[in-house]
Length: 433
Image (cartoon, rainbow, N blue to C red):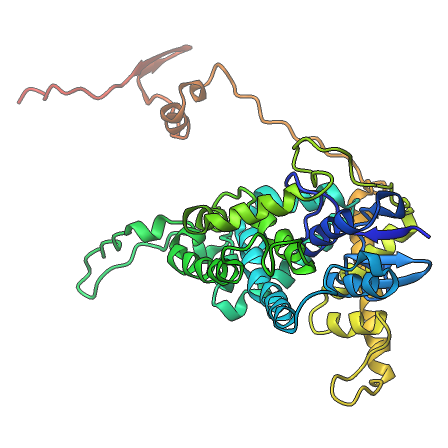
């Protein structure tokens, strides 16, 4: 029976955008014959009960996560195990390093590809947009980035995810202020640090974290061909390969790749060593003997896509999203005593989600409708009288507004039917004395 491996799809010139998915692809390519497995870029965590990719489907049995997939292969296919001959110290190092990669390595990768505003806008968000159908591009990428930001909070770097909104009044230049004596207060001089990007301002901190991470892996490998031994790679080598390969992606601020190439060249050689041991290149454009056994995923229907979109909207509802997510994935459970919570909370969560979706749909429908029988009014600018003073602009408008007085007149004498009228105009000549 063919092993079906479901992963996140290719991005950045690699076979997957996720480090564990990339590691699973490399592991399968090394230990499983090509005719015994199939690779599917499902890009949908809901294909498996645990909602985690990579996921292995073997005759209807689902296994999620890189470590669980490797354990399943070792249990059901002994020939596909690489860790059977590890010594107890090597097994301990493997477990410790795998945990280190899942915590510190995952946080650094999240900082590089997801938390960084420049990288997210230019690389990562467009990559997910190419993998997901519309309208899932509105819900899935923001949720993934929010989870990535949580990973870097313990490193004190979560503030780097803040993006400046040009429309926010708080970010606009302040009004002119005066001192207590009435003079205009001079603006503060901006130093070089105020013009730096968030990643540049925290460059020292990021370089220190990257150096510590690479030093641990470099020390574990030493002079060996792989991390634990010389003869052949282990499952840990492919897991480290997945993380390090994504850390080499050229981002707008490639602090991970720069630190690796500058101070830890042996890790660059390690990545090349693991890569050369694979029967095919994992989507990096290099020449390869054969291609991965890709199979087209089952296309999702409109109802399924809209259902996933509705779940994403419900998951993003403040305070109710977590309860909805737990209930949807197997019941609302209490973390302490594992008892089912109040059904009213479930009903409230579901009702709020449905109400939000209804409001969203109603708003979109209302904006797309034309006016209901309303009269169409046409407004045209008033044409200017070219014979009046208005044609002279502002000066003409001022003169046009002045009152017009009729000329004064006086009657000198009146005889019969003859009236003699003389216009009287003021004169600057003074009368004779």
